[in-house]
Image (cartoon, rainbow over all chains, first blue to last red; front, side, top):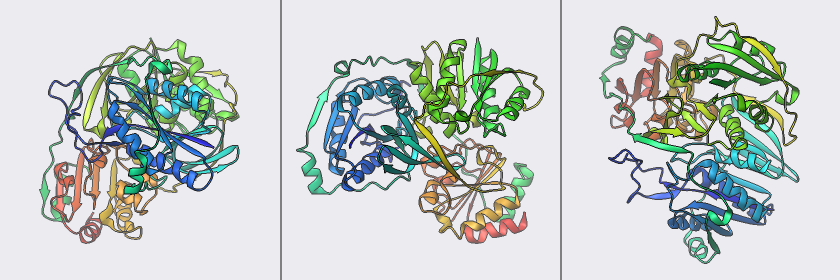
Length: 254
Length: 309
């Protein structure tokens, strides 16, 4: 069984992002970039399935700038067998390559690579859209198991436990399927130095959106990007009694 | 111009998030219809017909729609799409699961998690975990939008008198089936619509200790939330998580107890009207957004607070 894992190069989750002075977007120059955390969970899950003997090959795919090769190397250090970069210089966070265009490119890649399962992050931590997996599933006419916290493969079906608003929901999906990962699916490993060295020698193909026959022009234009309104906090109380007094008589919320 | 709002429900009750989504539809302006897709969902359709501003309810009642499976619900939305300028769903796990599937089938670039309506084509949405707000303008002929409920006032649940029209399901796609749900049993108010939320973080220390958070919540009729750290540590179930990747809440009063205030968590609660923080670390970032910060040991302060309220 082949597994395709789409991953995205995003601003590292520890970075406090800054809005550009001209309000055109978020400052990405000289900022640490990493694999989107949800995608890292997807790679880990696919690699575990390979280690368990269920999967035969794990292919990591990314759409982004030349430098996204770094994130594909990270995926291969965790254990993906090879990588494919669909290289584009268009922005991939805001006002450039959007989820629908990504889903179309992934569809073309799925048709070429014929995986049985696609595991990907539920959302990327830059534009926070939470759409691509569902869209890819729709375009392929496959089943979808979004926000997964557990998956169990059983031949031509897959049982997925999903993190939903009311608790946990379990669905049975017909294979092939798209899984999108939630935080508690697994805890990704740290790649070890020998694996990082080995990953450098793994196959990494670079192609273009044109080769996949997909038009990536955006449907949404970015009018502006702003800082969120700042909340005026910092007020202190010195005791529980003062807190109760303030809540009752000043804020009047109790 | 007509707007279709996808109702969120459990076949017996219309979920409150639907009323906030209707609030967003009202701001866009136009004739507002509601789609109730489910099984044995007549009561929900009747409730939706009573909501303020709704002129028509479309009810698709079929066994394959019972559990809101995206593979079966999305085609119903797609079939209706040509009659609408906008299709809205709550940005809940239901809306997030179903709407992008319909959007892709319609070749539309969905706009997720909209927090403000500028005009019929232009919307604001938080990005980068709420550290930036993007204003985006759509060029698609029909706009598919998920709505961040906390930033729109709910319409009144009563007073409307819409007609109810039966429409057909598009059948069972036979791609997925429902196995079961592990519901977190609780008599407390729902997290996303509660007036007061009491949340605990890593500082609470254990699942057993979380009882003091719950006791305080029960005393004041609050919902219980948690930071990602508390959920990851196994103190509470996943659906307690407040934050950019969990639930977004904006109650009248939010009490953050033993929560340091990671960006991810702040994104999920900083629109609350009043924020209280109790933490023994006076440098904790949560204090920078709190109206009333109390630097104290939560194991002393919380029982005292509970006792005196």
